[in-house]
Image 1 (cartoon, one colour):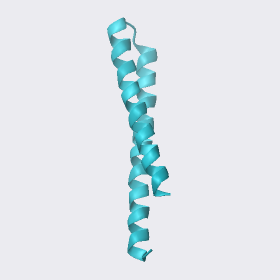
Image 2: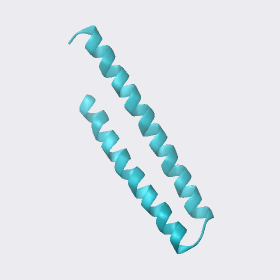
Image 3: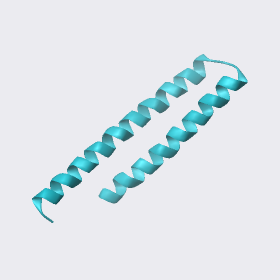
Length: 68
């Protein structure tokens, strides 16, 4: 593998790591919102948003693992 390929892989990993960090922060914020708000509609909305973020997190983690 060339140095350029290694550099691109590193850049890809860093980009995915940054996205993973952002998604984790989103999940943390949504969890805090869920604790602060009450009401079935709000709770369902936040639960759905958390589930979507968790799915995205799993996808990004799989992409990161595939990069090695």
